[in-house]
Amino acid sequence: MLARHLDCALNDVSHSKAHIEVNPIGTVAVEIKESHQSLKTEFDSLRFERKGNVTELVGQTPNARTGKTWRLPLCHRDARVLQECIDDATEEFEILMRDL
Picture 1 (cartoon, helix red, strand yellow):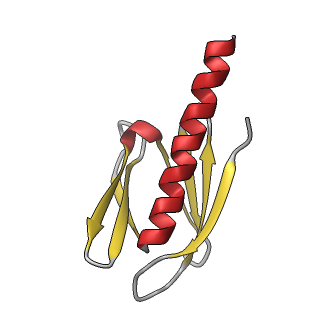
Picture 2: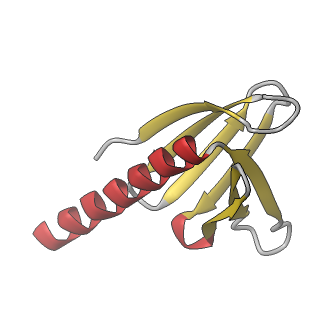
């Protein structure tokens, strides 16, 4: 059970680089290198919203007290690859739990 990693450019005016880690235990962590920003959420608190030529990754930080919604503009291809990573990680975790 290994985490999957994806590097992509945000589809906005800054074109900042984002490093995304998909962990099979059900979490996604995002590091935006230029702004030194770290974001983390669970699969259940994550969704994709398609808007024109951008797919926004929308997440909710898990902490109830400081929880906030964040959005990352991705190109459609990167969003599709990320969704596939999440689907694969979910399936891998389900197989592991079933085998225990």
